[in-house]
Amino acid sequence: MTPSSLKAPTLAIADLTLGFRSWRGYAQVLHGISLDIKPGERVALVGESGSGKSVTARIVLGLLQQLKTARISGRVEFEGHDLEAIHPAERHRLRGTAMSMIFQDPTSSLNPVFTIGVQFHEVLKRADANLTYEAAADRAAAILAEVSIPDADRVLSAYPFQLSGGMNQRVMIAMALANEPKLLIADEPGTALDVTVQAQTLHLMRQLVEDHGTAVLFISHNLGVVREFADRVYVIYKGRIVETGPTEAIFADPRHPYTRVLMEAVPRITGGGIPEIEEDAAGFGDPLVVHEEAVR
Amino acid sequence: MKRSFAILLSNPMSVAGLILVSIVVLSAVFADYIAPFPDHRGAVVDFANFNQPPHWPNIMGTDLVGRDMLSRILYAYRISLVLGVVVLAIAVPIGVTIGLAGGYLGGWAEYILLRITDVFLSIPPLVLAMSIMGVLEPTLINGMMAVTAMWWPWYTRLVYNITRAEREEGYVLAAEVIGASKLHIMFREILPNCVPAVITKMTLDLGFVILIVSSLSFLGLGVQPPTPDLGSMVADGARYLPDSWWLTVFPGLAILVAVFGFNLIGDAMRDVFGGDQ
Image (tube, rainbow over all chains, first blue to last red; front, side, top):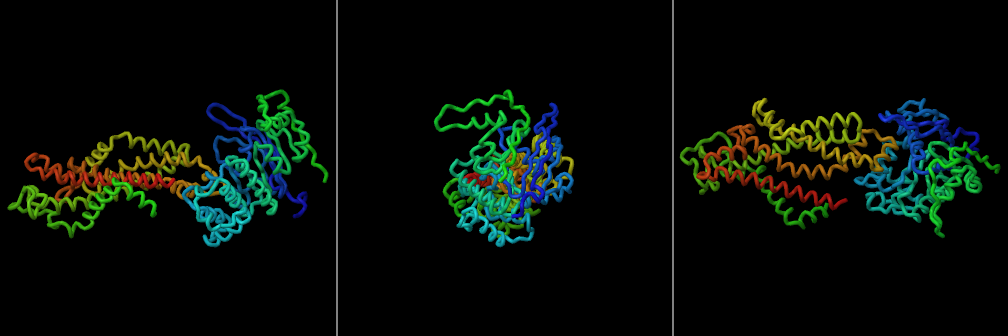
């Protein structure tokens, strides 16, 4: 791979704000988010429910822009191109080819009335509209082998409800990477699965994105998973990034008061309960803490 | 497919429905060959043999101008079935499309489409059909139009409710993310999930359409003489009850068989599709 510093970042978000206007008034959701992801880098966005993790992902994919009540400002650049400036048809073409996404619940993310093979065909047709089903099945089998599904024929002819959650999750990962995207957005992948299966699939996903050089925006509230998976972490609280830095640096030395509280809010096997996180506790509004990139 | 048949055949009520519907459909299709007096479907008179109780060869008796009741009932089935199929063939695509659009697009589209549907639903169906038939000429085509106009809103409601639930499913979001168009999501992703419910309702409705068309004919607003129709046959015979009982009882039983049969099949469909999920 070429040195990442020479290339434009895969994703660069600068001063992104989002608000929703309704008849009741105006609700500000994001207060100026800035983050960037270099090619092939795995970046985690961590925060509690309602902190603005998922809406950030949806803005990147261009799903919220269509909403009439949403007010968005700031810049979102994908491989050096401003997503607002490029033609909507162009932006539409990026989705599913250069960018893709994995969701929380793999089983409900697949349509129950079609076989996996048919759905794989649909996904691959995004990149090559004339692809036949047979050719798609061959491509799918190769990708499924990479996610440790050897009997591709059986899986491709199965319906989603005939497969286990872990199988579906692996199918979803294979589909998301089928068109060799530059950016993969993973919105709490596998939260609906049990912990062992989740760990297994995350391990697979980590290996795959490493092999394919895919950049990942990993959205999660699970610090243990983030520590395993990500190169760099952004901690988000109430629509603001409060701390950012390399994963080891943040876990070794959390400096922002909110990050410290978040790290303590993990259930321990020795018991003792989970500490309460107060709303707007003193210090949570502190300015952004940036850990310098370690010199390697 | 095999499993569906197994479910169908394991329930005696479904088998009964299957038999009744087969009788109705076969007699409609092969009326020309089964009917003892095929020409009695038209304007034929035989005053030497009028208003006779069941006897050989008129096993269901003869009507007021001497026509064979059995022959006329067989041909009436043909008209009823064609009417039912045509009405559903027009009403279902309209209703389903509006329901999908309202349920998936949301916002103003949902508001406008569903309120129009509510206007149609708020008028009692028979009254709506009667008023349309009253304004227009009472012909077969107008009868179909009137019944169609009162039928599509039910499919809109049914599909709208399913679509509202499916819209929140992950696979719809997944399709949006990979860049599928709105039409693709409506017709290729969500519609296949509505098909079991729609087919079940269509089977049930075939019986009800026959009943409604008969009701309109009974009121003199449907199929016009001399074309045989179950509803108008019952209406004509009702004046001669109880003496000439065969004029009403046999067409009435014919309606019962058709409606009951399609209802049983509809219930069976629900079992078959319910077992799949």
